[in-house]
Amino acid sequence: MDSEELKGRTKDFAHRCVKLALALPKSTLGNHIKKQVIRCATSVAANYRAALMAQTIIVPYDNICGGAET
Image 1 (cartoon, one colour):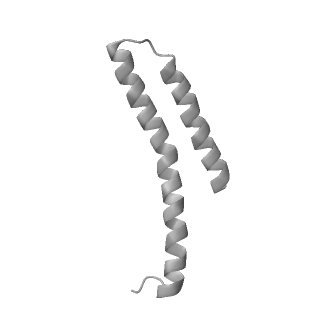
Image 2 (cartoon, helix red, strand yellow):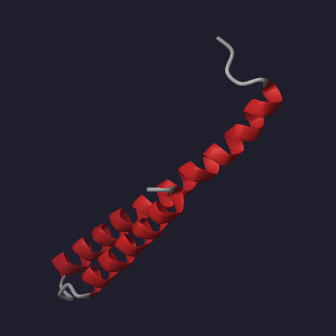
């Protein structure tokens, strides 16, 4: 599985979880669970994209600085 496929899968997962959250009952408990589900589901995709961005920044830096010195 390449990074583009995983990005798509995490995005689809977040969309499905948001649909699930919107189907929950409109009560105090339902609203609480809805917020938690949306927060958790969307953080997976956001964290994966942030990790990819960090890798693209580290690679040029390593090339300039000679990589990690031991």
